[in-house]
Image (cartoon, rainbow, N blue to C red):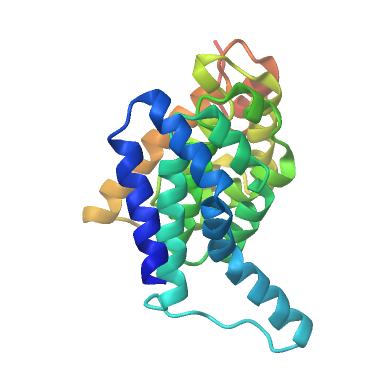
Length: 242
């Protein structure tokens, strides 16, 4: 395991010090020599273990936050984010495994650190990539919407939902409609906007920050004169149109 971590660190260091062309070649090397597959295998191993436990009837087990497997998963996610950053080819390679990444998010929904790390990786995979954003569908997006309710002190889930609607500044209306529909149908916008209990101090500051980011998301959902999302937003938030 130590040698594996050293291999990831060495490749990351080489890429960071290389020109764009050299970095592309190094990413291809990582994919073709099996390093990428090894990272993915380690990352997704908990999914297989959970499936095996379910099939064996042993039930679920909550892993300790200090569990070595969890620490390896976090390291793998960090490496994958570096691997895809600014590389459409690498993004396309990892997008083939996107359903498994979504399953990993669902498995770790109650673990804030892991859930955020998975979402950050998902965000880097689709960032400014029109083709991949066009390939998004409800089964891939719904878990990120659910996460905005369960992990509502982190903005990364909102940023992912923004990214798939406007890659490179170009609006994808179908994704606008999908995100708004999921937000409304699952819980309703007011559930996100109104805290369930009285807040004060740091908790109030965090909620206000989250609220600002959430309203930014709604602005992107309704951008470009999208009558469908504007109507849904007005209905849910009781906005009066003059």
